[in-house]
Length: 82
Image 1 (cartoon, rainbow, N blue to C red):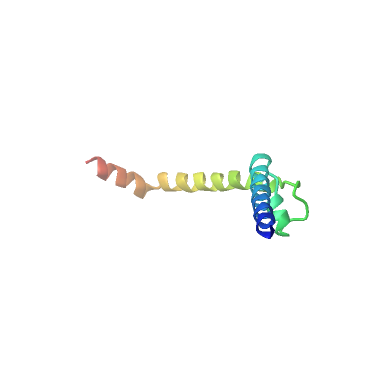
Image 2 (image 1 turned 90 degrees about the vertical axis):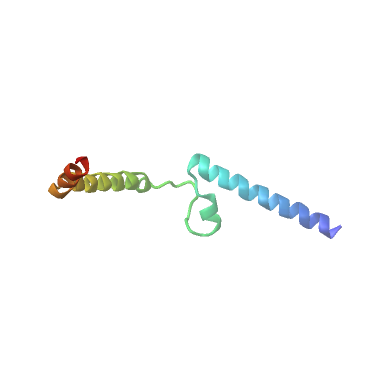
């Protein structure tokens, strides 16, 4: 009888964890981080995390523009065309 309760509890715990992970992904909530004590509220979403990838993308584009506009890159392209 104890084994049945343990298995039921274990399956319920896994189902709860999967549901929280799905809610985290679907609604950008932080239930798993909240359960681990990493955040104080699971429903607060930071706006800075949304802006960070844009800044990283901008810096990458600027870096690529620097590489492409250098004279060495143009010379290498001319040599490769020959």
